[in-house]
Amino acid sequence: MKAFQIKAGAGLAGLERVERASRKPDANEIRVRIDAAALNYRDLSFAKGQFFNPPDYPLIPLVDGCGDVVAVGTAVTRFKLGDRVITSYYPRWIDGPLSFGKTAVSFGAQTDGTLAQELTASEEAFAHAPRTLDAIASATLSCAGVTAWNALFVAGAIKPGASVLLLGTGGVSLWALQLARTAGLFTIITSSQDEKLERARSLGASATVNYRKTPEWQEEVLRLTGGKGVDLVVEVGGEGTLARSLKATGPGGTIVVIGRVSGGGGVSIEPGALIAGAKRLVGITAGSRSMLEQLVRFVDVNEITPNIDKVFPFDEAPSAYEYLEMGRHFGKVVVDIRA
Ligand SMILES: NC(=O)c1ccc[n+]([C@@H]2O[C@H](COP(=O)([O-])OP(=O)(O)OC[C@H]3O[C@@H](n4cnc5c(N)ncnc54)[C@H](OP(=O)(O)O)[C@@H]3O)[C@@H](O)[C@H]2O)c1
Image (cartoon, protein in one colour):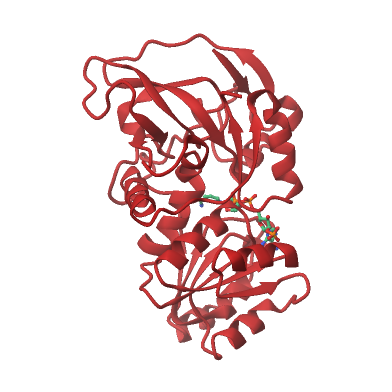
């Protein structure tokens, strides 16, 4: 089968097109013909050597994938031939609270991922794909989708009518916008570009702030919430945004710490701001398969279509990486493995 492989830290130039042998599934495994694989910021981080615990040999990158089951092991019970499935971010995190054992391995970072014609892995590492979405759209749930779900409804435990702040218009933030609007939340989203904010409004954002033109954007968020502050922040910015996110959060609110697109360095936070405001600072990492299955149900019931920015054919996967790195995208960047 055709595949790309890369060694952590090799840079985007290290992506190489290879032939890999097709593998017969073990008793508890399924083989999936991958139709589409989506990129995430973490895949850039992996290429640049900024990811946790990578192996010292090249592996097939990307975690997001959707395709059909083409072979099943003798003991497989959850899937049959022809089922359409999506990958679960952590093959060993099925349900319940996170443990280091459950999150030690993720596709495309510690074990082979989805930028290939096939993926053979334990049946536990997959969920049924949404019946309302095609393969390209379904391929965006495994990382950005489940992370947004976890941030809003699991770690964030947000209630209808509450307010949420979303930073930038990347994959996680736009998934969070679409889920939050569907759940009846007041949504404020920021971006560096007015054109992207316009598009976010057409996706249902309640209010928007240009963080370049308004560097003290936390003040604008306070104004937009009548001085109260938001109930929840989906914090993907890190170093350059976390302290402001804390200020933009109202009493009893939660900051779900997810990413570091503005830098991963240390941040100075006054303990008093958390104590006096009874605010919660919670880190999350993707989500369990059970959370992914909840997301699939929510997507199907509400017929949510994730925002796809651009689709690249398989051979142009390196261009997809470069395009994501440029940061011009609005929503997800996907590789069509069939094209
Ligand atoms: N913890 C987890 O489990 C988990 C899961 C998924 C992702 N992540 C992390 O979350 C972050 C976002 O991932 P992603 O895949 O959604 O990224 P992405 O699609 O590449 O989005 C990047 C976007 O971030 C925005 N941005 C850049 N600098 C910003 C700043 N200073 N303030 C506000 N927004 C800024 C930009 O939006 P505009 O162009 O609109 O300005 C940019 O388009 C990454 O750090 C990623 O590693 C973590």
